[in-house]
Image 1 (cartoon, one colour):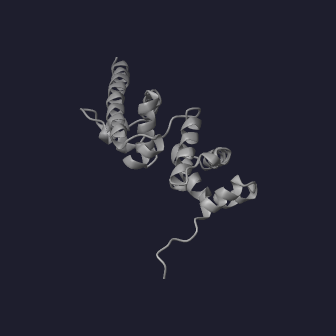
Image 2 (tube, one colour):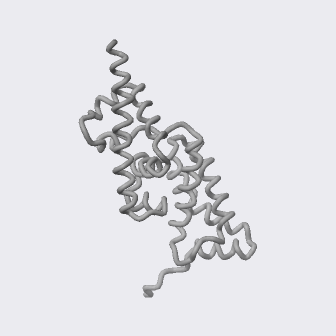
Length: 192
């Protein structure tokens, strides 16, 4: 029995596509369609939209297939391309659903259960997330809303893990301030 891994089907298909056999890309789509749709669904929480986003990610991957470096895993490259497409597309759509993990991790005196009591407040959280500066918003969205761990989110954004952790920390602090202001103003207005 050999310890050598078998031929890499992704590498073989990429080489065939780059040699002019466009139909070889079908193998890549077949192998990676479900994972890319699943990843897209984590961004948008809508199956139809996720399928459209995955299709756009495959188009982008096909267009830039020559940029894949064989020394890097194809899966990592493909997921990075897809995540970039998804982030770009989500900026044009409604904000993501609020994650209770994010709210639990907000420091200070805010009570996550209280914040989630009404849809109006839930919407305030979504709006606050979309108003974060891009570098903090992307970190927060990937980590809290799309079930990525720190390493995956950092890889998707092309950042060192330490930088991602710093952006998550800063993003949570900015969100806490925004929410304290927004929700505090609403409560004062309701009390009058």
